[in-house]
Length: 453
Image (tube, rainbow, N blue to C red; front, side, top):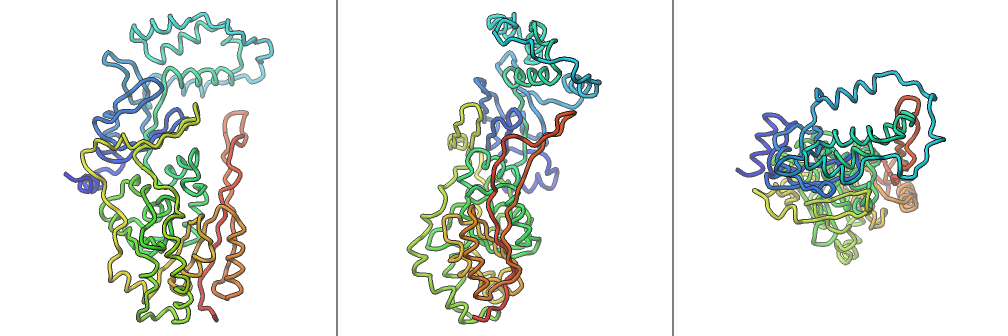
């Protein structure tokens, strides 16, 4: 059975469950490391120095939490349920009253003598089949300073030991947000430093809704295309246009687990074909000549200015060693191939777009001058259609905005800078996270009108 049939059957039965052949995002130890995997019965995941099979993830709901356990046949992933003993203990610990300020850490000395349990003792516990939770409790029991620590320090100690002896893996669904978050955390240059709040604002300002025909210039690996297709839901088209003869790579789209219905709505067409002379009712001939005037210069650029092609087999994000591995080895053995996206746009759709124009335009091409792209693509929109342009820096968008104002080509022009700040909300310690990105880029938005030139 092909993967498209499996996707369709799964979406009809229960879209919350995984299936063999789907893409998954594994969040290890609460964002310490993130891994994209193609879920198969023979696939494995390396957590620390242990290698575990991904078999338990098949037919499991997205959002499930797993923990590495030691078994007779080696380490394996065991699912954690809300009714488990560890969860109950954690809930009781959170609900129990805590007296703050009764202890402090001033008299504690970090001289590596507080722990009486040696490495040989821990290895002996592992040989006897002790679980990670039991090892953590043994470490706490044999610590001479644990009871003297504050409740905050005790929780920090537990979390540190849990990541080492009982790592946890969260099964996440690959969505526009989760994929953007994973790439932005360690490889932001591959998505043009496009942060998840900037991506959401980009879609909103372009008014991407169901039954829309969205013209896209995606030079961020396919993240923008996948986000637009996800919001369309199979109703409408997302058309990737490009200069030259080779489309820009959109490999990230394969991570979204789109079915055949949505994949068929992701098409591409060269800019020269969209600008070809025809019986156009919504675009004047002078505007078409102006839009196609730089075509020869565009063909010389080609797709060389796009971001490096992304291999979506696996992207491993680790905060321990700072290395990020993109390994195609995990896709070497697959039962079936993913549905191919980015086919040539149908001729009837291209004819309709020439006559009526696109309903919105989104550009995310940090390697190309913003004004040159907007000047060519804006005439392809229908009148009163919104557009949004993303760039990592403000100056190219400011120049583009000035030229649009001078040419009287658009109204409602504005440059927005999204700003996202994550807060830690815990009892008696609510504050913004100390490590956060300084900028998520800039977005130029506006509405196309009939220009006087």
